[in-house]
Length: 229
Image (tube, rainbow, N blue to C red; front, side, top):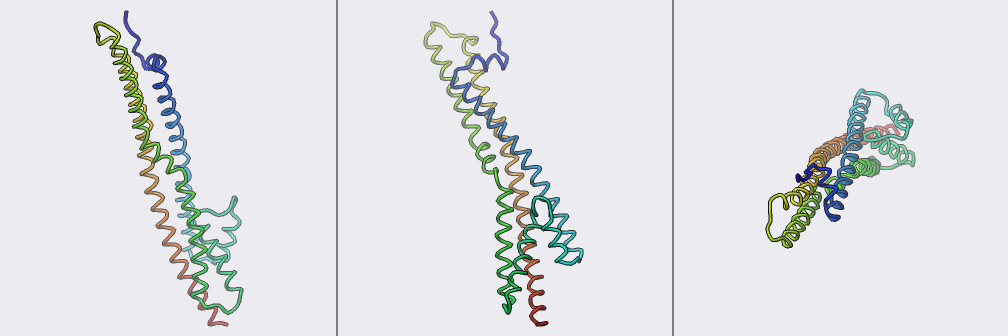
């Protein structure tokens, strides 16, 4: 009689421990792909929003008009616009308090922008640690299922007088499925983590550059106001 060696049959006939491992890896793969697609959209929106905002900011328009536009965005401002909004709001608040040194005003604005930037970067980095965990642990989980399946195959061989390849092949095959499933879950997660982590770092560098440039602009504005007064 021939043994059904299809993947479905091997999985259905696998030991309980191997089935649990396969289920965990399948769930990890589902979570991984869900994060990958969600994070892809989020980072793309953040990049597009930054490009659009920088175009408006460096076009030479009025800062008050740009600030009002940022505050009216549906769902609140995001990315670079959020950093600008935090800095300009703080600038208006501190400037209205009276005779304050320009450097003090800029320090307060820079602190507000840094806080906003940290929130934006944290939002972009959210769930990346999950991708890293799935990518690093899935192969070992799959290896555990493989070791367990092969161990059961050899235990079964100890109860027979003569062993044949047909007897051991199904057990080894189901064990190797766990390894393949572990790699299937790990490889996309590792690739996506490295790619998205790099994109987040690049956006963070852009945020840093904008914060410093806008701080210089606010410093010039504050000194001009003091001279007028």
